[in-house]
Length: 300
Length: 278
Image (cartoon, rainbow over the protein chains, first blue to last red):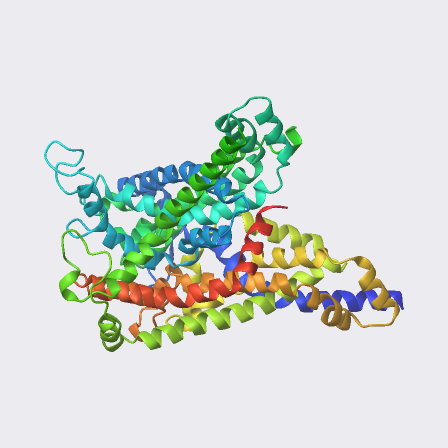
């Protein structure tokens, strides 16, 4: 009787799991493994794949454009610390009971739920060199003109030295609300007494922020920096829409896209670059863990 | 003394409100600017300095893009992908999460290890292989191809599993003593209790599908099969000189998701925070 129940329960369990496992098998397990294999082949969809061994990787190592693109993806990681810092400040700002506070929290979250394409097209318009809102504000503030910070109207999205930072700013802006919500939840777990007693002992607000609040948030900062670094290294949508195919903004994902669906159709080669990008992102996850592992409430 | 103290308090609240309003303008200002541009007529877009509020506002741009591009078709495509994708996602992941949370069966640990491992591995090259798979399944250039790869989702399984785990054991045991079948226990006791988590997962998935850009860009290359995100990118590259059209398209694509977000924000935000904090 009991044995029959157990067999029945096992069958029941597998029937429930099966649909998810078939789909995960096809669209996650198989591609993760097969992309390793594919990186050893030349494949352009039209003719059958031919085995080339490690040739693709040799080609990657001598491909200057790829390394430059990867360098830009790594530069893109510079958005991570400001996003974390500013979203922590925003979380502290909205972590109080005031009339209308939930309206403010919600409004800060709007950029997160809108599509990156919509966000990218409006920022493209704001950044417009001649009629953009940004340059209008800068010139009203008297920052554009002979002998000023900007001698002429900056071309935010077509000047090679400005395009990547401009797009990075949009990524920063779009991410703030998301991380703010996570930090807000985490702030609610910090005992109020800790901050209060520090204030009574004569610490000022900034000391409390850097000596108590941020160390207490460390586990959350770890979580947020990991996901934020992973998405920064793989950034595609906003760069693709705002910067197009400009070389100065070609990140690794854009480069991989260009070698495949963007017209190159070198699938094996792209798979080997994808693996290198994967290794780099694992490396940065590891660095994040090293930096932020300590801290949190256990420390006190 | 008391006067100064309450004055100081008032000043503090005032400063906080000013900060809140400043950040608010920073976060929704770009969308208001998008709306403002979308409501302008040809004359007042390229003025210096830019006009903040259109005089007079006009819906002309919306009418014109409605005629120029198949906006209703694209909206239906996005809705199809998001609704069907979300529906299947919820079913598949809610089912799979249950045995992993509440039942004992051989192979369970192995399955958990497999899921955790593949959840952590980066998937940067997967899109290439997935495209080849879709091609052999004749799903490229179909809307089904857009959502099928995202239906089974390890994050979703873990999220619903967490909710099943929180249900007290006594509920299940008393039902078992009453002779309820496995299926009845799941259907009548477990499922109703995880509905809030299912709602959270549903909202997350819906927003994700609605906004997705990269994967549809790869799967779809027929104009009439575009989702709104692809359509907006198309508008952006077709009407380089006509910003008003692009902004009208942007407003049009944002409105549905903002409405859904405002209705469902309670679930959305609890889900976001419970995922991060153990």
